[in-house]
Length: 446
Image 1 (tube, rainbow, N blue to C red):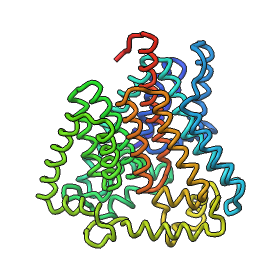
Image 2: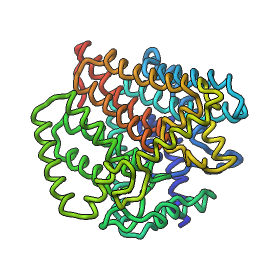
Image 3: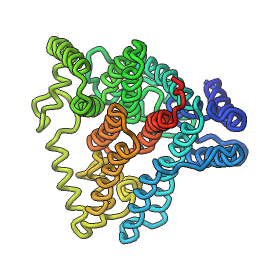
Image 4: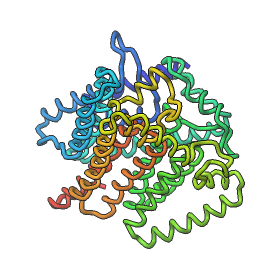
């Protein structure tokens, strides 16, 4: 197993080395690292690496090279909404007393860096480097394919994940595969594992990655009409199905339905209806699959045999969240009160692990915080239309936002904003660059 640790060290060395000699390759490798390696807590000399340290180092090298190359001015249009969003949330935290301010600031710093730094680098690099987005695209295709094939293997291993379990023990982390792989009953007859995390830190992180990757490959297929991307789409959907996280199916279904209604291409609509009809026939012919999909409509969680959260449970938790903030309904209890509560006291008796974005937003930031979140996403929808003109491009970015909202409302916010921001910046830069090139009469490199 030592070869795995050696491989990780070599992976990181290659990333740092190429920062100075092939920047686009370095970022692409780092992109793959985030998918294929669940941890980065490595000690090099007296320094313990973390994602924030690596991100800041990447930003420093990028700024130095950008200034040296004299390519132009840095573009902040995409990152400004995120900065305003995070600054607004930490500002209202000044009026709370439930969480130590040091804990608030530290949580805010880590979230800000993980959400803003890499997307800022990807956004600007994509705009000024014609080959950058293609490097990211191939890094995504290769790394997700590897992780997806590994996930297929895990369906037959009774919840055992030798790779992530070894790394969890090596880095002294809790073994998530042991918690969710064996302890949870499989929801599908062709899988012997409860939930699958593949190469990532958690099954829900893996499923969310699949959901946003679905948007990228859908865009590629509509743009190039290449059957390889169609195959990758079905491969992604199948991996979402076997992951054991039902919210992934719901998020993609709701987002894709919005896309169909907004994009309004008859060929795509008819093809989608045909696929849904075929899928419904397959589902109805298999009791296990039928029970799996019927659980989406089981409001009280009593009719379906599937274990998991029900709508009635979520409503009960919403009452619990409102009870928690009854003394400070406007600003809540602190920027990261839910994280502080779980760290100091464990799961909440009613809110459990704060398994909905709405629960954590209300508890942390109150109704003002909820308004900030709503305005933030409304601004992103506005930004899509302000900077872009192509209907398909706007629909794709809307789809990405809707998938994020649907998924986090169903499962909670456990660092998914950082994943969303990376994919949003990559896809937006690709669309925005093509629009600028067309306006200036440049040839677009496909």
